Image (cartoon, rainbow, N blue to C red):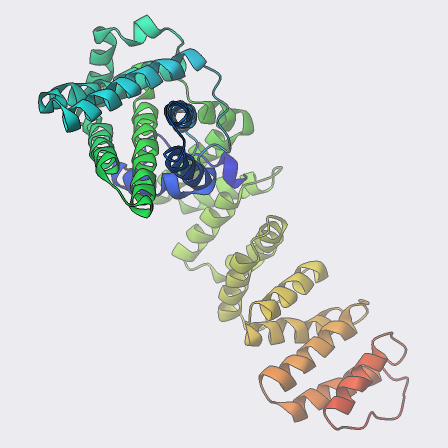
Amino acid sequence: MSRDAQTVPADQPLGRRLLDGLGYPLRGAALASLAAFSLAHVLTDWLPVPFNIAGGVVVWASLILYAMECLRRTANGFAEPPEVALYSGYVPALSLLTLQMLGVGALLLTITLEPGLWGLVLAIQLVVPAIAMSLAFEDHLLAALNPLRWGVAISAFGAGYLLPLLAGFAETMTYYSYLRSAPWLLRSLTFAGVVYLYLLQFHLIGMLMHRHHDSLGLTPEADTLADASGTHTDEHLLEQAERLDAAGKHQAARVLLTERLRQRDPPLRVFAAQRELLRRHDDRRALLDTAHAYLARLLADGCSRRALGVVRECIDLDPHFLPDQPDVLATLADAASDQGMTQLALKLSRGFPNAWPRDPRAPHYGLLAARLLAERLDRRAEAGVLAHKLLRAYPQRPAQPEIERFLADLGMQAPPKGTDP
């Protein structure tokens, strides 16, 4: 699954979701949007009246559109911010913009004329989460302004309703600081804080909607996609295997996972669950036997570092372990060398010509092992011995001149050409 389509379980612990949520406005497209909105809004200060007012309205409208899309995406169970504001409900956006401008106007009056309007500012912040929740999935402004709807939202969210309220209050106070700031750099940073808190507030609203979607009568899109792709089926299978193992039915749990792995496109988490089960019961033979399919799948998904970790685990169980496919072994040897895992790269590359002496790549990986010995481990004599063996074993291969150059770099003479393998 691509990062853009990563999903979040609705029942994920609230503490973890909150910690992840704090970084939501600073991830992916949200961070780029935050920077763009902040810079654009501060630049409007340099425009003459009424252009600066019009520019500020445009920035706020764009911010609200993007925040509403963040809300909808989070409420639908997706983990990452949207790339662009795909939200098409302009009536809800304009409605929130009107409410936002009313709040800004009240805030300006509290600064200049009437401090008593702080009550209106706080009252607007109190209802914004409930109104935004209704407007995100409906275009009916009058329904969203219905206090009964607000009561439904507040009762569904319970004490969790305080989360977007606190974010909204913090945003209001930060915007208050922005309006009273003078230096351009300070205003820029302060408004960036406003945008961050605004996106965070809408993300928190979406998070609460996702957690309480049953009470609100919503079906998250992520759940629909998961059902279509079989993700939920695999989750249930993993839960069933865990219950069987906890009940002492270890063999039944293993059979359940093994059958899934024999089917088409098993997910990595099923492989990981199988290995955890085998590790838990110290079945070393099965850990080694099942590692080959797991390594192939990890590499197919681009998880080379995880694959190298599995190889290390298998070598700890059996020092003679090697992947059973030459393509897998070659890829892992290159990856270990590129990532600075010298000892592991040496074992894998040295094992290649031993395991598949007739493979056209055998001289290349034998030479890679010799280079690792000489250049990283300073075992030049051993590297020379290995290079001489390669020349004798592969006298007619295209890699022969390269092996001879390597020996020359070591200050060693190539042996007379022979034909013995």
